[in-house]
Length: 297
Image 1 (cartoon, rainbow, N blue to C red):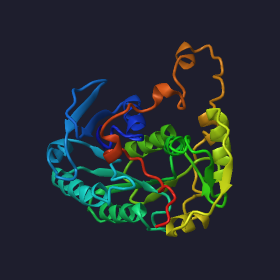
Image 2 (image 1 turned 180 degrees about the horizontal axis):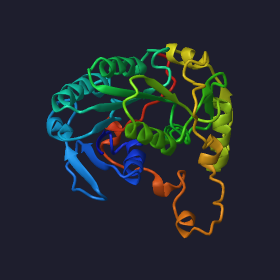
Image 3 (image 1 turned 60 degrees about the horizontal axis):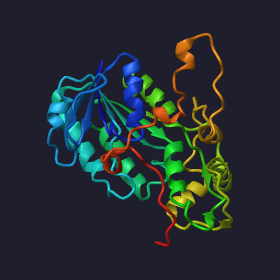
Image 4 (image 1 turned 180 degrees about the vertical axis):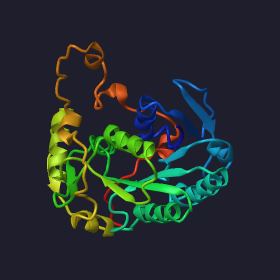
């Protein structure tokens, strides 16, 4: 199959592209920056907001993995208008399957960026195309970056009442690749990490892995989205789940020796070697969805 990936330069895209190649698919990647083809990936220039280049990108593909997102501060410019443009052009091109990545809880807590995700889900489901919606919990990698942003603070604001169910992007990519290889599901599928932790446990493991010592100040994050998270609306008991825990992501266990040389010398899903490259598209089309830094708004 030839599969178009939007958001290919983002956190999830950087894991999905190699997963699709490994599964034997041809990959066409959409980028807002002009790129040369490399690593068996056909790079296409295009902008979902303006629509420029998208018609050419969707031509002659068997499926679309739509990972591109406006992010937390993008006001839905990609999630809603961009998704609408993509679907119109995909329908004109006769694309049989669109997989859209959303977030667990979008249907139960449509606040902030989740409201845009839910609206994009509706567009996908009503597009007339074969469709699959994959709702995920927050990525290990996203949480790690968010916590790194607090590293310079003398104390960390921690709301221990919030449950988190982080999942590894490598495992989400494997799930998405399997769904793309199958027929359109025509439904929403949830996928989360193997364990539910509170913010205190997340921060404790992160501090330990980072070699930092910081006092943690108990706070209660305000806002409707945090209230929904506190009520458990952003976690899932759907099966299957991911297997890589937050602790094992931060501190990967040593590899098990094997007689298979290739197995021994393949980077683990948590290895820095398998993490996506830094890219200027990351902030706009990165597939990095998550939660806002606590504010008083």
